[in-house]
Image (cartoon, rainbow, N blue to C red):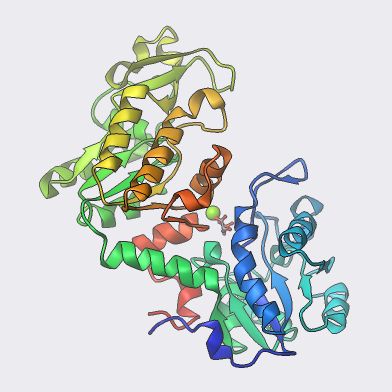
Length: 407
Ligand code: 3PG
Ligand code: MG
């Protein structure tokens, strides 16, 4: 069955609609460092406001421990949303308590109210269905209908993502519709050659997706912290670089399976090795099979792919028609170690310019491309969901989509 869409909710004029968004954005010293997810939530909110609904926005932020914590307040997010919408966004200082109840009562059609962080209540993420259900009832009491638009969180079984949707007429928002459409295109009918580029720090996070993608892709490109476990699996010393020793055998298995299936696994041939983990660390480029040949010896830490690898990865992307990319190639937050990630982003943007289809998957990779000065329009799609898009590509059932009629 397909996703239920907003149209299925009928006439929304004068009705109260609760929108479960994913406004979990990075915040540093009280300032939002990447507002991509807030921007991505705007089309659905505008649509509902234009339809004459009174809109209540609910989201989580970070992983507080189930009680109010000012460090995880959504107040700065509400302010930013107000700027982007060009209208005031009222803010309730609690989630389902007296402040929220009063604010909901005062809410008029075409006005917006944001509730405080859903995860300030332990029932939001509880494993106990009855506890989740009770919290969902409190949220449901605020609204005549529910729109689920937090794509980044649809892989979680949580009160506002799954339980709430069953208590009121509910539908997918425009963002969830778009994201699912893109991921369906990648799973059902990707134009070949299809390459997947994986980075980020941990192989263990990517195991399932590597496993399920190997039979479907022509090329798998590996960068980021996880590449060192691949190099170790090939028998190379990696100095003090990130390494998941307990994954080495699994990775060997993947290398063998890829060979059997005729999938090209592209690993870096050179590495930027640094004396320590710091923005201003001394660094050298060395061959990937001789990381300890850098002057730092066994103390050297690989923080980016080298220039030859960046060029080879860009060429692999250029030779493809469909590319999905998740995870930075290096520590892009430090300008000295951002070149690999920038090269991949540029190659993906170029592919798009030539009529290919390049998708940037995930919270971190999306934040990376924006931090490096790319625009969302440079790509075929920039997903707002890291874990969610990977799990979709793995072929997993996502509870937040099932709750919206998806099968
Ligand atoms: C994310 O950023 O990964 C999503 O917002 C989901 O958050 P979570 O991983 O804490 O559930
Ligand atoms: Mg996450």
